[in-house]
Length: 486
Image (tube, helix red, strand yellow):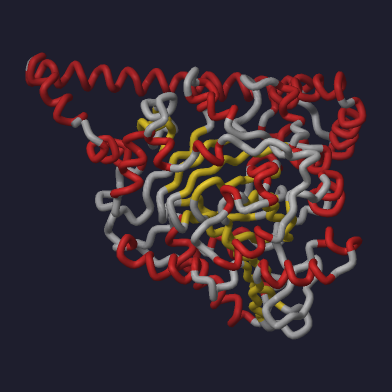
């Protein structure tokens, strides 16, 4: 089978109820929207906020060029503040997100001023190492303003001496011809039962280059490190110093939740609006292409962020529909609300991510991402001391058995955090799984029910195969199975 047959099979498994993946014609409609986002005249950062005094919705936009000029004229002690400017020149300190930092910002400054305060950031030039002080591999044709900013950014060579091999290896042309990766199957979806749907990378890149789907399949693979060839991807990048503290690492690779993903996204694909699981924060580095992001602070209600009441019957809610249709409706509803009801204190922030930029999403922030062009990147979720409280509260409830193992490891390696976890348990009168016989009984019952359902499903399939074999004969059953699979 060629890429078309492989893609058709993957799409059928991923969304069997969707018969026509091109029904909205977004392959034809999307280019003007993408051209607008990539235009040099379009500021890449914008926000919409409700003014609490007047109740009016205030929309602003700004650019990296303004921020660069401000930093260039500021005293050295102020340059680390990464002050944002909107396009009329007025300052918006600490309220215009994300904060844009350069890769020479010391990790301790990032931890204290941004991560601990739950402030989203964009950190530029991390993957380029020493080459970021010159033009190097950073130059893109998307935005002349970005090039000018990059050429005036100096990156510290003391901590970031070696650039990522991914800068040279993760273009689409290199990936499709990579002998270690081209024949590997990567996850590009799930079926209705939660089973992984995979496609070989060479077939997927051909699909990426030729498909006309409204919302294409998207490689979002977390198990590449289990493949003896694909795990080479781990050698192509390094976890930035800003995010090197990873407390879930104490549990071990086999027991911890999924936390890192290799991403290959066709234009128009993306992830719908969500909060990262278990209270974790995330970083996302883009190596190839352009992405569009939207962020909502944790206090914005879920029903507002999702825009469920604004989705018409029969409309889809994939990432591309969210950015092109649902988000504009949300913003219009905010402007007409007068800041009342669920729209009180509303905030949202949109921005465009370019190659070499790393987005930091703090725990609890809603976010959605759309691929404006074909993209390649990597993302990881993590727990540090700065977000430990929230992660512990969610992990002890959502991953009960793992939380017990984690607490034992914390007692051994981070006794101060173990004491903090126990203090939170006492405050909430929370019993750990290994201290709660009733929780253990419920767990055993749930596990037994899950195994029973699997067994019953397997038996139903066997009975159906036996019925078809009796009706049509063995040879005809084999022929029909081949027809169905093709």
